[in-house]
Image 1 (cartoon, rainbow, N blue to C red):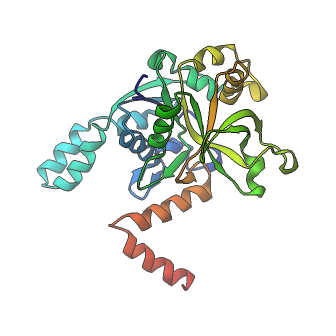
Image 2 (image 1 turned 180 degrees about the horizontal axis):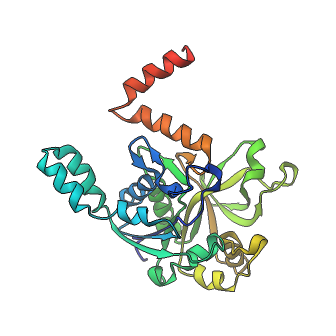
Length: 292
């Protein structure tokens, strides 16, 4: 069995849901407390044992590469000023993992973005972590959870969680079949953004996948759908129809959709309450403002 050491982060989206903040900067670089949102995802992957990460970018995303690169001027300045705590924080960023980049030249969907990773991944199993989704679990990162499921069942995995009835129409919903254990069910089908009465379950696909290299063959065969986009879920469905087992794993963790304004605000507040530097002041402020 091949060890899972590679991950792909699609980060080429335009971030239209949080305009005008994303007019001149990538949504993945929007700050949550004191770090860009993308760094939280990279740190999750590294804590899960991932050593090689490919970030799929697009136009006007150069700041992503700059952030994870060595910054001589800044680091020299901090060292000269004796600000060694800050120096360590900055220096650690450039040594988190082996980070590579490829551009998605045209906005042709998530499947097209993942296809850009073919030469990087090869035939290896790999994690996909969507750039919109930060998932917090202090005990075991979600990518690590998926890797452990892969090590047990050696098959494709889609990260899911149960969502409220009113939110079903926002997500791709799984039609489950055989149950493998308490947290894993075999996927029979996906229904993209169904009406509540047509939903086969309330298990929604939420931003984390672990797939084998077989996915690229299916992505290459997948024709563009709505909006001319190649959908990853269409390719996964083709694998399922070819009897390549894919599990829906109900992961443990709190998800923040930082691609929308409310999700970004929630992430800032809740991560701020977890941060030693900000939690006391923020808690005091919130108590005063909402009269707890």
